[in-house]
Length: 66
Image (cartoon, rainbow, N blue to C red; front, side):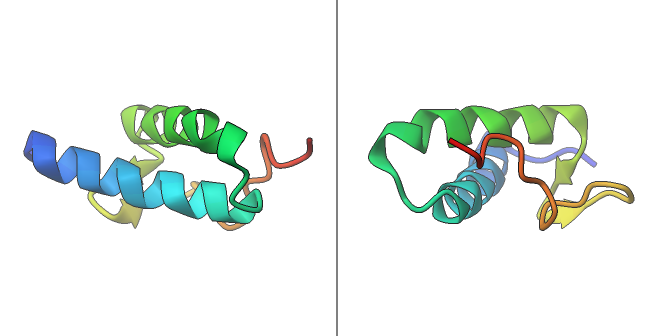
């Protein structure tokens, strides 16, 4: 499935915000959450608003313990 750059950014933005909320909306974590969302998207864990099998976003706690 091919998506536009706008769609890609929208999906990453949504996931980055979810990660940031999970971390308590801490201002210094915004970029790290964005980078994590990009990594998830590019690895296939986050695709077009849907997760692929095995990608457990709700259980992902990486980076959440600081």
